[in-house]
Image 1 (cartoon, rainbow, N blue to C red):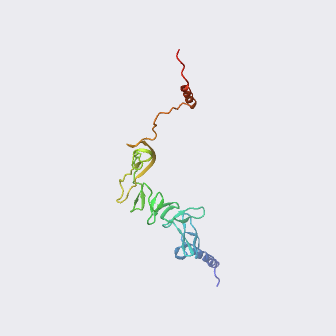
Image 2 (cartoon, helix red, strand yellow):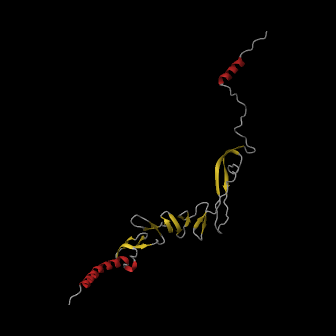
Length: 232
């Protein structure tokens, strides 16, 4: 009995397609569907190259690392697009989530978010909001006040260098209970040139001194010592 030629060709074609289907299955699904979205994937290390617009996330388990292609990087990581592969990179040590290596979105416990940074304490002029773990600029600084009287050892008189101080207060409108705004102050040196009552000013002269040149003073003495002529 002769086998039709078309049947033989069909069987041969099916045999050629079997290894290809197996390869596609390995690349498309892999172990536990961890190769989904991969271009290159292995059983040992998972994905090493992802499809366009996907990010390669490397998960480390001890000394072993395993790649996975994801649409969005998990918390604690941010996506970086490259020419060959898009990768998920880890945020800073104090960031819970971040937009980039230098810009945090949410901080870990005991840190406060301020302008993309996670700080242990809020900077001057801001208040820590415990509910959001953020430093909010709710302390509105007012204008500088007038300089205080110049004092030295608590006195405003004398002949010495003293200090004068001025203050800049901050408002508390809209703050949570328990939040405080710091008051700014600055000081500078100032001269005190007013004698205290009962004290003599050492700068005062006991008498007026003749400030003419020494030659003129000597000449006057000589003229005073000459004998006077008798009157005719």
